[in-house]
Length: 146
Ligand SMILES: *[C@@H]1O[C@H](CO)[C@@H](O)[C@H](O)[C@H]1NC(C)=O
Ligand SMILES: *[C@@H]1O[C@H](CO)[C@@H](O)[C@H](O)[C@H]1NC(C)=O
Image (cartoon, rainbow, N blue to C red; front, side, top):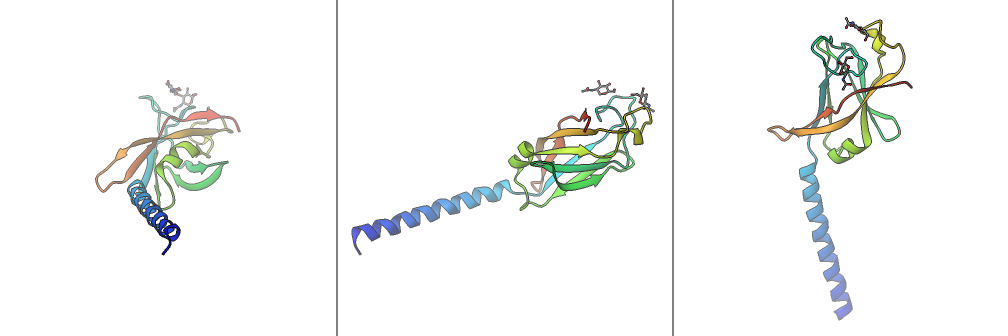
């Protein structure tokens, strides 16, 4: 073997080891992800002691240029939960690239509220639970005419 081909093999081995290390740290980042929250029937979707909840509302997870990636419907308590496949999403990408969008008009839960427009919220990382589920919640919803 010439020095040159020996060097080449060495570079290959080092490169492969680096790849392996990267794959392992990626494995720690990837985990089951749950996005959950409670939707309230107000112009900003958020809580105040007197605000009723917003049941039967369609909540979409939209990423990039508005691609609907997952969706859920709020239950009678206004709660929703979206579970994401660990291989589908990396947390950091979710937090910077995706929003929660409420498609059901606010007038559905209170006829004094707008019949058009959406509620939209960015996502925020809450923490990891035992079993290492990544918990993500909405930041806060704002009303937006669309
Ligand atoms: C959201 O709306 C409720 C009811 O209108 C109000 O009490 C609350 O201050 C608002 N919160 C934010 C963050 O705008
Ligand atoms: C419906 O919305 C109006 C306008 O925000 C508010 O004043 C009223 O309290 C709401 N009604 C209920 C039942 O929450």
